[in-house]
Length: 205
Image (cartoon, rainbow, N blue to C red):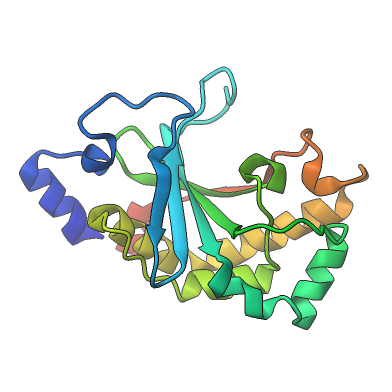
């Protein structure tokens, strides 16, 4: 990760330079438009930002959403953990191509500053159990063609697996405690868990 940022600094480029095509980012726009897909590894991501009015408490510039594509998770669905998680979330029956794994918040300098999880209505797909999500993230190797971003996302996940496991546990606690029906579609429940991260401190330690 440090090498990646050092190369970007030498070039005078922002982490998102190639992704944005040198343009000012537009709120709510997906970058890239059709998402960035690793066809061999089975991962997918996109970057976007919200309006300040939408999230007045957020300190981020925008965030990456990370997903697992069907080959990574379909064989796991009959496991005890996935059956229990499906029951926890009301046994959703819809067919989806991806499962949301994690969101990584970024500051205006292109540095990761937070990790969080979101409800399924936000991304339009579904989630996996905490253990299944952590396992897929721990194995993540991204090859989408956006090398700098792929490397940073891989390294953040690797550095922060302890925090990610806690986030996933907090996510499931929130879901199980929610009193509304159809919890995954309840728009009152958006951010399920959130954790600020300080990578400088983590690297120094």
